[in-house]
Length: 176
Image (tube, rainbow, N blue to C red; front, side):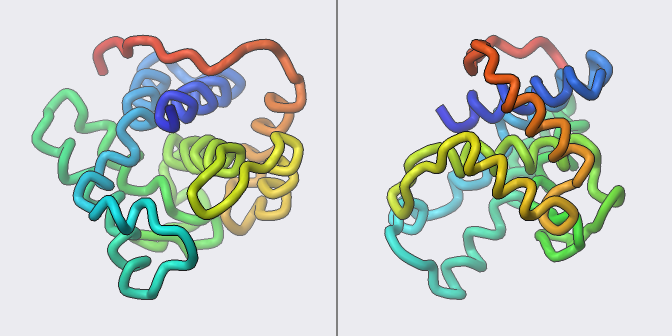
């Protein structure tokens, strides 16, 4: 359900940003496919409990490149490639794979970064217990300007704090 929830959160932020229909469709596909590169990673490593060794972390960090390579041959997904490739870039330039900073990072990748992180924080994982939505929002605020685009964090937190009843629902995406 991770990808479906990331689609949901990404599109809520896209709506708040009043992104075009085309950008929203690109974001929907990218959010759904953002972790596809993890199919190249051994299941034991993906489900490992406890800290990763530097060599294991280096392998895990390759998934955005592998994911973008997987979708590259699909002409209709060409606009999704930079979003998948850069969804782990940090706003301060310390992310991966390219070390992009600020607005060098594609807007849709910055949106996806927040949605992906929020869902990861609010979902139980083999190595950690889920945070509440409020705790996750506090974490996003803590790292605004370093990991995350500060403007987008502020908008996203407003969306989450509305506490509306809109739940993540997966819908078939339309063509890119």
